[in-house]
Image 1 (cartoon, rainbow, N blue to C red):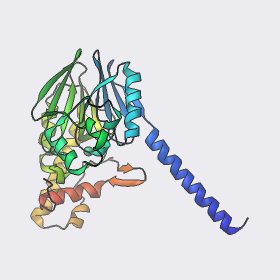
Image 2: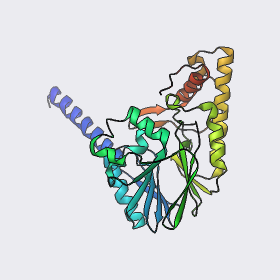
Image 3: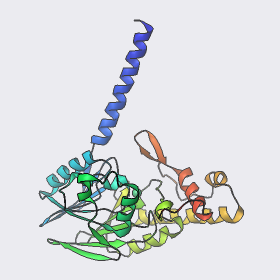
Image 4: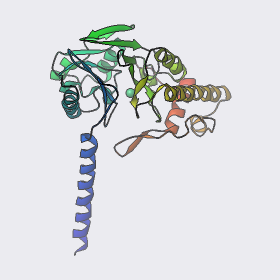
Length: 301
Ligand SMILES: [Zn+2]
């Protein structure tokens, strides 16, 4: 075979493999049942909580693409036998909200006011035209109890942590808590300082969530867990804040901070990858701790 032909065939093979990989990542959804009425759906993006009520299905978060939203809707309705009647968005990030436009226009979409503010600031192009009908339309600032059919959902904004608009959702009767990205289980978290998030205040936000009566947790990313794993994550965040304080006090550079060995509570943590790109790792979180401690970032309004 001619050399050029071999090169073309290898290149075509690589493109095909990449395409198949991309397709399977976007396409694959996996679900797990937690109680009679609660499921979680895992896929490329934040975990989706699914609550069956006798008045319809409520979901928390919608992943990264409209296409995924369509599939989430189908899977959730198959799992519960009830149409989706409400969406709760834990925070504004696209891997938790971009599936929204796949749902019924005008349905109840709940978030904090800050979450809607951030979406309008950074994501108004995506949520324009028909998609605007799936922007949050029921906003809360304080703790709120919602009744949907035979179920109670307690919504608690937890203040600055992952962003300044985070909320956690408790499925009261089922004792399951969806934390959004306030909690990453066994993974390095994103820390969105620009949207008012805070390494320093994160632990206090977790404390508020821990006061709620739940047995199991659906984290924003990672597997379902109990309280102990979230307490471990809280120790990690506390230590990270401590490293940031020390770095600022001793005048470490960002690079020195990123190479610090003083962060030990991350043992066993895995990097977060989006397709083939590593987006969150140890260097990232240490860099963010330095950014906050030295005020080396720009808060978005
Ligand atoms: Zn997030």
